[in-house]
Image (cartoon, rainbow, N blue to C red):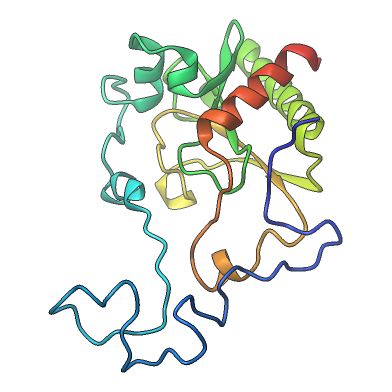
Length: 217
């Protein structure tokens, strides 16, 4: 069975991060030596032995683009997914129901990190209708079963961030996070390096989960 790759270890211990404490420049690399990244560049400062993992795609998130702030759904990226001409594959929508849908997070914490949302543009959990409340809960349960079937996570983080002060990146449209967790996934890279390594493209993750959604009840 094809499974979602992850960076945790099955026994709960931490997996050494690639490059931690070492350098591709070799053990003799020092601040005074030139490496592959600096040998042909000038005026960039003193070379060092650090490796860089560039993530320019996160700049949009950091700058706060496309984040609605009020009741108007015109600038909501989630509503935009539902209103444009892109396919579910392009929009990373994993599954749809009558009142809710599931979509992959563009900035995932772990492989398979998805969100369950109502179609209606509402911000607060108390604004959901009884039917939407049930639909969000049932879709969340199904998401857990689907992710377990393809990647056997050791646990989950599931929750709603209500308001920017609580950590909601897009507070104007309610969304419930479903994050698979493995022992050792909080290792050197995210804790010290502030870098989350994701070994699978989002499109491949979406295809894997969408196929499993059809066979897992």
